[in-house]
Image (cartoon, rainbow, N blue to C red; front, side, top):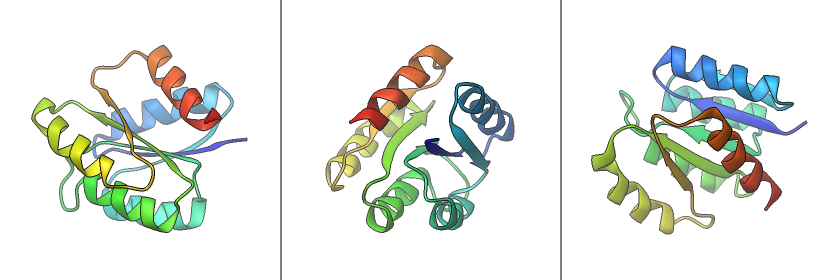
Length: 122
């Protein structure tokens, strides 16, 4: 079973996404901060990190860079509702060994599952 780590400071969003992934045959876990995301990634060893960008404390760009360094085989999918972040996220993503894919909120579950499946198949 493929492991997905969902990191979003909005608990309802993180829990809903985790539920969607679990119902579609993935092993998904949710955490609610970038700091907890780094700790969880080290122990859970996800194959896919799904993270928000705008979070208190460390943001999602710091999380995706850290996970990319520590778990280079982990694919990263960014889900953000803050369109002003897109340029910065794209630029930082291109500097990583494996660039992240980016989706904007709101996102239909079918599209999220399609993107996740495509990333995990690559």
